[in-house]
Length: 68
Image 1: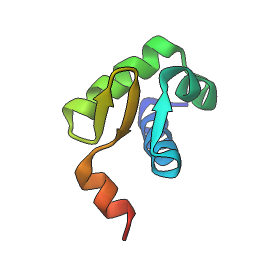
Image 2: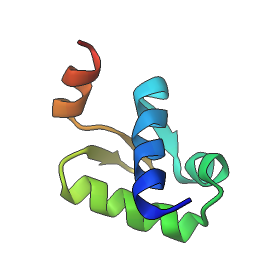
Image 3: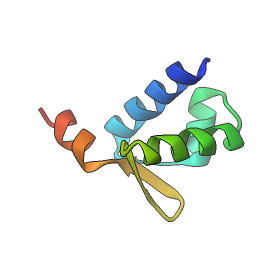
Image 4: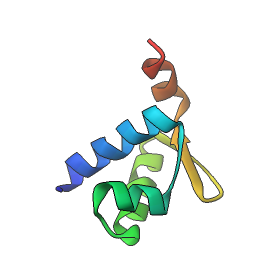
């Protein structure tokens, strides 16, 4: 799975479950936990995710869009 597809899958998984662990995302995407962490850090910098300890959830903007 390429980077763009993997990041889209991460966002879709978070839309469905609201939170996710790195290990869960790694299992779902088939990517290493290190790769998932890098993706999550980039998504967080872009404002698409919010990190709370080891759990990630969608950012406020995306959460409100997902409710529409």
